[in-house]
Image (tube, rainbow, N blue to C red):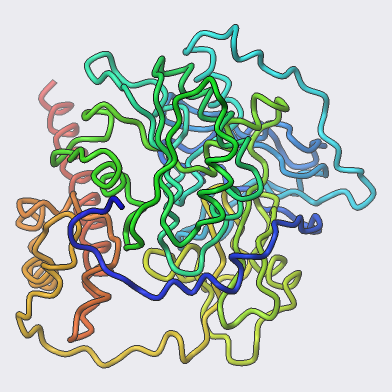
Length: 450
C-alpha cells in the first residue's frame, strides 16, 4: 500500500460515527452566513436588512477569480448584514437570516447545466457561481483548480478520500452512501481539465468505502481506487501525491506543477450536485462526535447553522465536556463562541472532555529529534520553535516556514509538550502582518516620490 515518509499514528477514534448513516438536521430558527468562508477575497453582499430570500438564492457575489459566491441555505428574512463571530476567532461580515418557520424550504426551479455541451471555461464559471469550495477544511474555491495555467498541464486527477484526522467520518460516509456522485463529479472534472485518468486514494481503515467506490466505477472512465496505509497526515495534498503517484511537489510549488489536481471527495460530490440539480452549495455533511456529545451523528447541516443549534439537535453536551473543536483534534480550531456558524469548510464538530484535553506541563526541549522524524515536509521544528520564541520571523522564512502546513505532527510527538504547531501558526500570522506593513510602506514611499 502507498504511503509517504515520516508522519505519525494518532488514535483513529472514528468508531463513534463511522457506521452511522448520514441524516438531515431540521432548519434552525436563525442562520448566520459569513461572506468570508473560503480562501481568497470575501464575497460582496447582495442583500440588505428586510429582504426576503428563498433557499438557494445568492446573497453574496464572488469578487474576482479567487473568490466564491455565497447563498441562502434556507428561506426567510434578512435580519441584518453585520459583523458576527467567525470560527477563526475574528468578526466577519455576515448575512443573518431569520428562517421562515412555515416555509416548505423548497428550492427555486433551476436550469441544470448540460455539462457535455459546456466549454471548460463555462464549467469553471458554473462551479464558481454555485459557491463550491474545498470541503476538506481549507475551503479553497474549487473552480480555481480546474483552470490551471498553460505552463502547468495536468494529466491526472487525484480524489482525496484519506480523511486521516481522528474522529472525522463525513468523507467516509459520503464514499459509502454516494459513490456514484463521486464518480460523476470526477467525470465533470475530467471534462473540464481534458484529462482521461483519475485515482481515488482511501485509507485502508475504510474498506466499505473502497468496495463501494470500486463496485460503481463507470465502465467508460479510467478511475482507479487505491487503498493507502493508515498514517497522518495522509490527506495532505503533497502526501497524497507521494503515496499514490510517487510524485514529489518541489518547495514553493503546487500539485499542478507535477501534473496533478487533488480534490477532496466531498468537494467532488458537491460539484456533481451542481450538474445533477443546478443547486448551489448551501449545506454540507458534518461529523458531530467526541466523548463530550450525547448523540454522535453524521449530519447534513445548512451552512450558517450555529454551533449551539447543532449540539442541541445531538442531545447536548455531557457534564464533563470542556472544549468544542471545529475540524479534527490535530488541525482543528477550538470554539469559544457557541454562536459561531458552520461554514462550507466545516468537516466536523468534536466535543472533548477535560480528560481528553488535559495538557502536560511544558518542559525545555531535550533535542531528541522526534519532531524531525515526524515532520512530513522535512523541516526542523525544534530550531523553528526556538526562532519563534525569539520572534526571529525572517529567519523562520529562510528555514522554509512557508512549507509548514500546521499538521501538528511535531506537537503530537514532543516529549516536552512544546506547542510547536501553535507557535508556527502565530509566526505565519506575524509574517503576513509584517509583509503587509512593508508593502504599505513601499506604496506610501512610491506615492510620495511621485
